[in-house]
Amino acid sequence: MKLFHNFFCRDIEAQSRFYQALLGLPEDPVSRSPIYRAVSTPQFQFGFHDAAAYGLLQLGDRIPAQPATAPVTGYPTFMLDEASAVDEGVTRAL
Image 1 (spheres, helix red, strand yellow):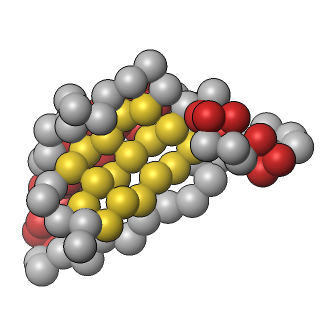
Image 2 (cartoon, helix red, strand yellow; image 1 turned 60 degrees about the horizontal axis):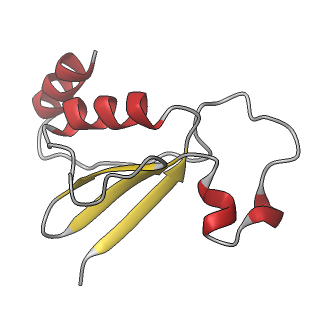
């Protein structure tokens, strides 16, 4: 089984770059489209949809009525083995 987790984002490029750096993973070029970016491993794909994807995914009735104040509509939790791994990821991402 492979887990896919996706967000709707205002800026898919910025979100993709941030998580690439944070997780030390490259972009998944096979999944790239004008409205989607992702990082991927054999176990999971972590993706970022542009707002244009709401219609494509037949989720037009779920578009937020007012623009959200946060750049994404949810957040992931990554459990790492050591606190130093968190620090290293943050240093790469920022």
